Length: 514
Figure 1 (cartoon, rainbow, N blue to C red):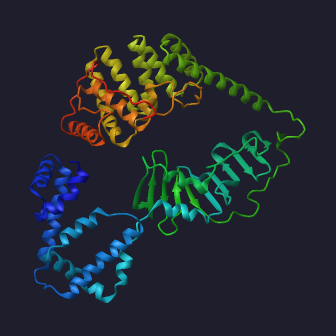
Figure 2: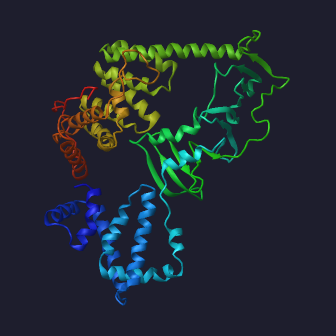
Figure 3: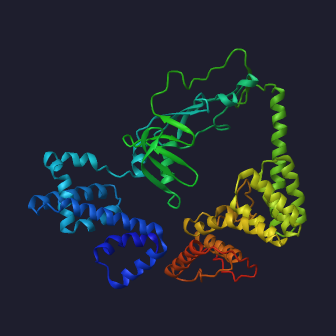
């Protein structure tokens, strides 16, 4: 039994309504779970407060009518929003007791008699992301502002949204980088202020966006069912809001308009832009480079020529990076190391090049070099659990078991959590340099693993790290595998003892078609 299932049964346990078998199961869970014990204590306290406050009241028809209307109103509100509230179900179970019903009515009956409309004000319809999707249909303009630490505007953008939800005209003024763009859908003007240079492009050749389809952004978020979470009634710098999160994005929603007020570092508003916002204006003293089709050829300033050289260098580094990934995947470890060394020299912030360079050294037995490269990634990114795991294997190979244990302990909770959250992407990417991504689009590259594949691969990592085996099997039923995952969670909660087992029995990885 997990915590969610247990909490559903607490009110019935308190009232003595559970069958014996369920009662024993709940009590067994409570022995090991402080969180559920705390919730049971809160329910007991609530029940006792209601009873002690209501002993002087008598049962009346008015009391029944009031209570039934409260529950009916709450149910209607919640059903309209398609949200089932677990607390309401527990409340109903407690309120079925006559004495607690009387006590509750004692607390609210005067307010209800005065005006039932107060109830409508106290019960707020639940927020659903579909409300924001609908609200965006009426938005024509977005104004985005980002401030720096001193409160000064460092990035300001205006976006016109077409009837199709796609970006139409666009303006961006990023003062922190002396960069300015206007796109009126006929010409794109880019002003490099620090270079006093203006470049004109055809919109089909060069474009700039905040999001290519701002009117459809929340439709995309709604489709991310694996990582989408909604937190209602949170505070955003003193403003009431709802928080919408996915793995990669976070927004705060105005409860009244249902439109986002902030997200991705910006604050949003939806007024009409000032006149001339999207006009193409060329200062008289600016250097002009016109790259639109049919324009007369113009001499580029030296800084643009130098930038092209840098771009060519980056293109070469990308080619070497892709070649190195192939070499690592096919077992050519020394070749892979040589190529990755070239990449990190040209692009020293490219963390995946450093990581796979470490993997190449690990594969041909240079564990000291592997530890050094993995440590650079950890210094660059922070904990980086996938890199902690790789470094732990290198420490283990050198016999440095205490150092390995420390890294395993950092990675382990993330690995356990990934069985439930299906969030093992970086672990999977780290293990497969041929995986599509990071500019790697070769015809032979691998697709993102399925949910079933990702879980099976994480189970195998856990078996090697911990020596545990809880009978997870890709061919077993969903119920059996749920029990196996729950066993991993319980083991980590109660023991979590690491026992490195390199020869652990591994599960079969399902084929991509499964």
